[in-house]
Amino acid sequence: MPASLPKAAALAAGLAVTALALSACGSAPTTQTTTGGKNGTSAATATSAEEFGGMDALIAAAKKEGTLNAIALPRDWANYGALIDGFTKKYGIKVQVENPDGSSQDEINAVTSRKGQGRAPDVLDLGTSFAISAAQQGLLAPYEVAAFDGIPAAQKDARARWYNDYGGYVSIGCDAKRVKNCPTSFADLLKPEYKGKVALNGNPTKAASAFGGVFAAALANGGSLDDIQPGLDFFGKLKKNGNYNPVESTPATIEKGETPISIDWDYLNAGYAEEFAGKGVDWKVSVPTDGQYAQFYAQAINKDAPHPAAARLWQEYLYSPEGQNLWLAGFARPVLMPAMDKAGTLDRTAAAKLPAVTGTPSFPTEDQQAKAKEVLAQGWGKAVSG
Image (cartoon, rainbow, N blue to C red):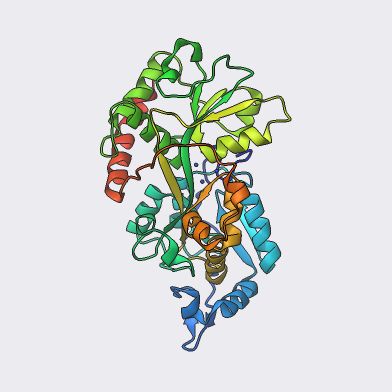
């Protein structure tokens, strides 16, 4: 949910958890009631472009709305700037991004507090655990993009209320000019030489990137996808020995040297390495050998989106080869990468630049993520306080 890193900077970087102005006041409800298709289907209820009357009808309706409200999408997070510009150039629809460095929870808060308002978010980019929570709260509209069948079953909601979009591995980024020996594992991070240097990209109870960081630490310390507690204990040790840095890492804090070691998604850290190469920051990236954890972010449509046709067209764009390859160019692994590789539509040059990893990662189930969130909600503050 970058430098601003498309999301961060939490799901490509510094997720600054800035407070959203959640006032109840705002413009009057402006949700569009654009219709299309043979039966006059409303864009707000269409569950596919075909149901709405086809892509041409959806494009026309979206252009008529003219605007898309997005939230928590930093332009340099997983290459979101190129995606936003590409969508606007292709369809002439203005993308308004609020609170670009916001967290997944900020997005959900905006949906609930602005229901019926014209400034409510149309679309959401959420950590998967947060997407599951939003679906359970009845906040999301079911919608199947044209490429829906190509998304693995484990990477989408069976009712199409959310589906994964891009992802990566938890990694350790390090400023080699400020840190003599860059760590490559979670075990390394406990060494005395890293006192006050180890930061996360956000609060794990609110930001999916930090949530993934704690999960990876759990896997590195005897935990499992069913047991995130060892990850909490690990950060408690980091806090106790003085290595934990409470500053939330962002491109700005990295450039200033405030967070010389950052646990974050590999696509964000890889993006930093490229971005800061000419600014005196020698940013090294490694996927920890002892805590290999991968996760995706998920796309969703606000059930009460003020621009429902534009929201659905945005999803179609993101899951087209063009959109998927733009994420790939930002070092993120698009969810349709295997299908596109098979179809010959994958940008193989961009794929070759991804950080090296070995093995096949496991992904937590909905129940495992929900359980982990409960553990974090109860124990994170205690683990790193004092």
